[in-house]
Length: 353
Ligand code: AN7
Image (cartoon, rainbow, N blue to C red; front, top):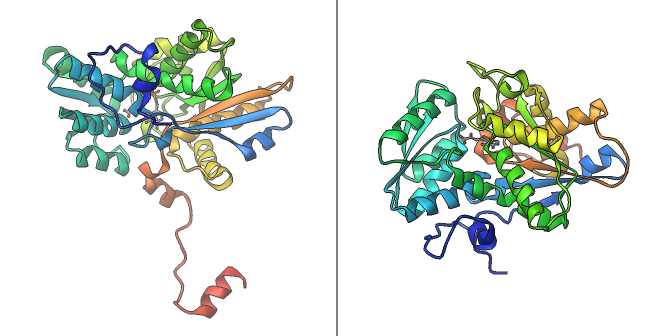
């Protein structure tokens, strides 16, 4: 099939017209991978799938929203776009703005974004400003500036971002033939859970599916405002992508949770790193720490006995970003390679032959 990106594939469900210039890097169409190890671990009748969003062009799910946001910005003759970011939004905005010939300005929390993401924003030619503040403060600045000047906001407060991101739920339903029973995902600024839930409801409205999943969202313990019920002033977690203390789509996330009969809970950095290693070692999938929060959450719920064994139960975990975004984390998490002499005996001894 000649695949042309999420706008082309799902334009029927998106706010685009024949006049919209489509700026695409052929995002979307990511694999839904059956998780052999996790499914077996959960026992008979459970099927766990991993939606590997790290395989989008810039390595995260943000590209689905960015193709629509940047296309609409071009349609309205914008000259420049701006966002605050924990990293992935800036990488995606920079790439799509480059393709569209738009200026891109990003504010990042100084010293707190993963190296891969920073490299992306820089090489795509964005103006990157590292501000001496956390993500929440940076986003407030961006909101203020974009309200006053001719700069288009491309954070997920921009409704076109949500529109594009909802296509991931369409893909899951198209692949499974219906909605899954549960969807597990990380929650940061809460745009993505909002987008998925919107997508599922719309697909049901169009009779493409006949049920809705329960939405299970996970925040990092040190950055869990929704779980705790109040903003977190100094959010802390090794999962820098979701180090967010006052999510922009807080209310919408609660609505997704409540309407679906799901939950929003939290996982510790330790649980995140365990899931991070398990995914790589047992499923062959390398994700960034924030993405591992979904599987960490799944494991937490399994331990609690949350899932009842009734019939075939399908669970989809969203793996939001690629592991190569944050290679430093691997080095901090696992043993570095052993240095050996360049001789046969020494190597055979090490590998036990
Ligand atoms: C890998 O890039 O907020 O709940 O500025 O990069 O929709 O915010 C990233 C968020 C999950 C959380 N996984 O999604 C940003 C940014 C990864 C992410 C999230 C992010 P939302």
